[in-house]
Image (cartoon, rainbow, N blue to C red; front, top):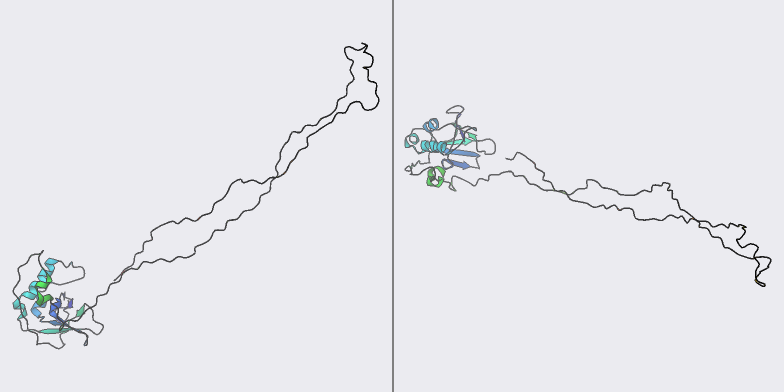
Length: 242
């Protein structure tokens, strides 16, 4: 992109790479064969312009036109920079002229929008070791990585709660009831020798009772399981790159 400030104030035009000579030692870019007529007839360039095939064809048409190239104007004009060379550099009219360049205008090739190739016009887009050096074009890109870090921890414990439990157990207890009754055959005589006349203990009856046996017993009520699960999500980031 050439700033034509000294010829046409504020106008910027496109310069084919084949019409330039890069001198890294001097920090200059030379516009080879640029004439004032070309500068006036070239379509203006700005950042909001869409550079498509039609626009480029208008630019190429000016550089192909031999009437613009044969005018009595500067044959080689340097694009001087006081800072590291960039793609946009103003033209200066006071810089040295390179008259050693000889303009040759090839015949306009026959092509269409779909068949055109920059290699068909080496006079405009050809690159040679004498006039051009390797340009490294850099581009930024986003590098995504991830690191593992501790975000927290979970401590699981248990505590004992005490409460009072009540239980009811039915028990049995034996007791002796002594009754004196008159039998139905009272007064009837008995056979000799069958009467048992004894003193002292005559009958023995054992008494029993139940006592409650209450004790505490531990049992498994429930269980708590602790485990980790991994949740997946996608984190998106947006940055401006050059």
